[in-house]
Image 1: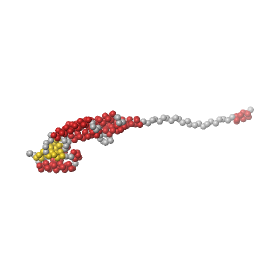
Image 2: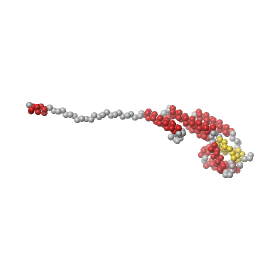
Image 3: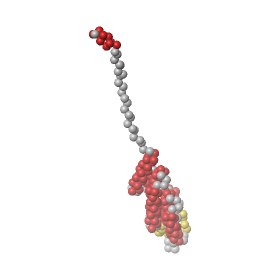
Image 4: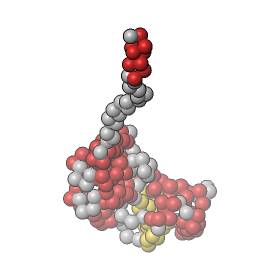
Length: 231
């Protein structure tokens, strides 16, 4: 019996157990990145914030690339119909128009022209700019109408703005003639500082001689010889 049990046990085979294998865990879902539309909206908000900050600091059109106007332009490139950008640019135009009006009240015609030109560059054919430009033309006509008769020596506006050596030489030569002929003069300038600079050049060219005359603001820059003193 013992032998039979042993024989039977030898005939029964134990099934092999397969080796254990690691089961891969499911991968965690990767977070989705921002969509192109979300990126665009973020950039719009970023440039709007920069534009508002630059405007509060007075950087309306300068420095180039970091002004309120430049930031509003970037917004409009991303969103052409953005109302905040359009309103911001209009606010800058109005600021330049107000500065032009203030200069007009001071009869600083050169400043008026400068501010209106800046406003025109931002918003061509703006009715506010056209209105102030018409006022400027009327003021200049009135200023020119009140000028006395006499020989007129025109001065280049560009040379005046640059205070060029050629203009200084011209004024020095004119000053010597004024002294020689004892002429009284009227200086016509675009703004008070410009008129004073012209007078200073004349006075310094003839030391010891008193150049007599007045400064008028408005019209094209010029010096009018109104006649010899005593005539």
